[in-house]
Image (cartoon, rainbow, N blue to C red; front, side, top):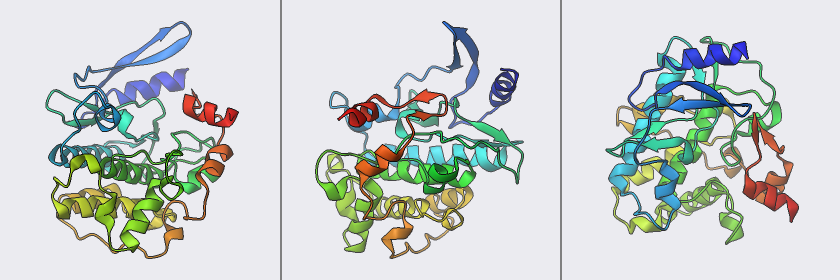
Length: 282
């Protein structure tokens, strides 16, 4: 408990325009709850997947991607300690009144000194955003955050969750499908159909290919968040995407259902998502 409170106090000192301000915590019915600034437009995933809300245009999506990248760079390199978020995904990005994206939910975050990593050995995060090495070792690093950010970029560009078990089998794992589109020279086929082609082609290709690079199976081969922000801002060139699909996240021979079944039922201090519990009961 003392360690939790100490980390919350430290996280409350974070200040960045693309982070939701953590105001404090409270205890209710035996649960510890984090208190954040109110964001009037709610979570990003509601605009990506809800039929009742208008879809975000590409200009807004690209601005959100760049903003979240800037916030994550601050967490990794620009604060007094390294902050590992450990749960980067669209539902943990909140939108302010101007639809600027702000990374939220620091419930799984861990602090460590620069050039060191926490010695946690349990898996924490959300299926589809977990780096391959994290599922084996349980040890979070900046590289595992980068992997999750890669999944987030593909999610934003494609309008699809990283893993979807309904529909065509070849599209179950998003990174595999985007890679196949890229390999065939048709990467724009992976773009969100709700955009109806209304996007800057160069930006869409950049986000899709950078998302693939961040999904590299070898942690050291992924770009740092500083490199990611430089590429998104046009200050650095995008490296070549490796042609071998096995080097990107999951190989195309890996079955998504098997992957889900292999995961533990709990993630950090959270229970498995309801859809995963349902899948396991089938």
